[in-house]
Length: 540
Image (cartoon, rainbow, N blue to C red):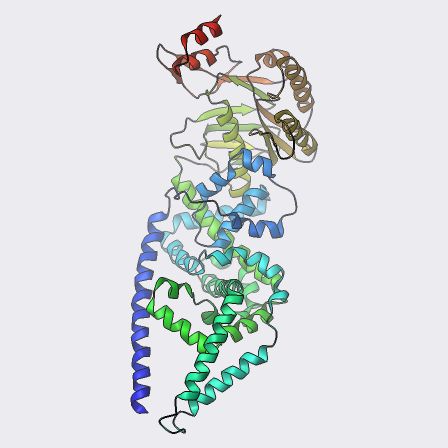
């Protein structure tokens, strides 16, 4: 009997030794990762639609609509910013970008947070270690949706698992009492039965276990974070919300054990998973935590958002460092948009531009000269200004404004809509979004290009004259030089140009005053190697 207990103790100590070595190796790798990634451009990853979770719960219908989001390639902009260590951080960042607004008080505290983590590398890395413990597991992205309907996930017939635990304990206690040749039979039988129940439970409730384990782990690490220097001042609501959730944190270590270790071949993980199976500890702890979470959803979401905002502030600090240059925006009460050294954050070697607008403008220019990129850059920076208080510019000023676009129009064969029908729907939604209360920045690329020239000019003129008298600044890219003449008194005129050589075209990508005077479509055909007869006919 003694030899059996010593053998079990030996196995336990061996497993714990392996676990400790794995744990400290993981910590060392994580510290190196945290240090190296700050201020670097994030690696491109497949888009994860689950980052919309928090936004879907708290969205009130305002902010950036789907068309504008897609027009501005905001998925890519999101990924360019996101250096988050947690799923909560990515979800809150997505929500901030879609929300596209901050009050003065929000802006001030957000800026204090970003500058704190920019200036204090040591404290930032300590906090990021705790954020990495929360992590970005697949299940964690669904926590907001899960908590929104948590009552439906509470287990029924909890007493069955309690009885099985009691029988397991009784069979273990009986080992020294029973005859030696049969002493282990009841214990082994109960281990097998409980393991079968555990496997069945995991197959049926894998997602729920992952969700609640991650949810409670977040609270534990949030509690550790709340004790760090400066957190109480930067996140004053965090400590109070955690105080209301004290009872929920019990049992956290059991729930947050990742069974994926077993799949990956980790010996310590396999043994821990077996122990959880035979004791049914994870199942009974799961139900306790569920009951404690019910009724504390508001406090939990406060903690969730605080952790997300902390992660976003660190990610924003990293984003700023990774840019060629950046600034914080200035806000005015005037109908005025100003920018110096402004560029698009997704372009590797961008050309920066300066522009000041007190009314709407028409931007003309040859193909591929930079019109669309410029108005996208202006719109993207307006979004970044109001969501993370950051602009890819040396100077950027604007009023509080909605941002809406009509750019990447496509026909919809499934809906039976032509290009032109979809385009006028996009434009109509812009007109309907205009209000006197809040200014609107509109970015429109190649207005009404889906119809013939004569009708396009007449209809475009009517729409742009309508926008002229509204509370908006429109940046309109067009090939129609006729519009620059018809609207010359109402719209400012700017253009992009190029230099045409014998063998190529060189674009400056710099915005210039006045309407465009050059054309390059035929030259582009020539440089692309089209047959000579086509080039000659086009020139005639």
